[in-house]
Image (cartoon, rainbow, N blue to C red; front, side, top):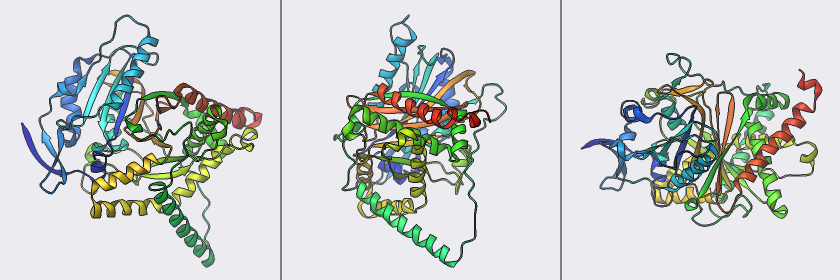
Length: 468
């Protein structure tokens, strides 16, 4: 039975379901104990599907070719997948099965005849968990912030379901404000204008004519988004990251990006010394909502919501700093390099101009042309980096404690995708790498080594700071 619905598909939703690009989000919930799937149907029908009408809708085109969401009856059995493997094997065996299974579903496309989401229940114990619950959702349903907010609304605190989940405060570095004179204001305005025009012009070139170098982290191959990927993860303690933040007087994001960028350069150097400093650009996803935390789903879907549902993000073109001789003696300088690069991009209004460009392109040339431009933006750069904030407390789904949580973006025309999410005092970094081009375990090892080096040189090498 079909139910009529006249909600238009957002411009970004139309781009991500075009003929040139199709992007999905995979969220993995690691359970502490083996999964009991007896309540799966009831939870999906009573809790998940009612979250948003898009979870029970398909995309259709009207007579003018404009895409709309149309409500349909959901056949839950079409959306639930439970893979079967040989019984009685070791957790290490099932870990390898799980890794291969993730790679398989990352490549699969959604049928357009049913709502664009699915659940996979991996019931076997792996090296990291008692079982894994995988949510795969198409990016047209919403961005990571919206989709994670939806998933979190299905979960409760493990210790007390009646108490809401809490999230880390987003503390920023406080800057000393002064009152500049006339020439100071004029200088600031001029610098902002020049910075904006320079960034916008560079972004335009990177999206059209100028590609990153082919390197150990970028194959540059056509159709790279259709090649198999391997998804691996590594974890860092937030308390250690906060120590680095405090000692270096930077933000947590500065620390994380500094570690990631240094790990990338170390991997490139190990794989090919000549290309260790190849031109490489990271597309850092920026949430454009002016908010400090997740909102409830009803708040997101309200008209003129402060934190609206949907795709509310933009890309920052951030050059990956080069690895120099100075970084060997002062490895924490890479954190400052990352901070300066990101701060420079944030201080300009190029993101706003890029948004206006995409909107004008859509109106004048249509969503397919705009989608091709976004595809080119992604393909010409080396990687995408995105992050989300998770709960402080342990969560549970139907009384099953969740041990770990991470996500990955798939279908992106790049060889490398990095995502980060905090949960229970740990930052989980997920790395999606192109099979046959990037050695996932070596890459992960280089990022871990970068963190260890920076932490050792910044914290443990200073006896005064380490005992403070």
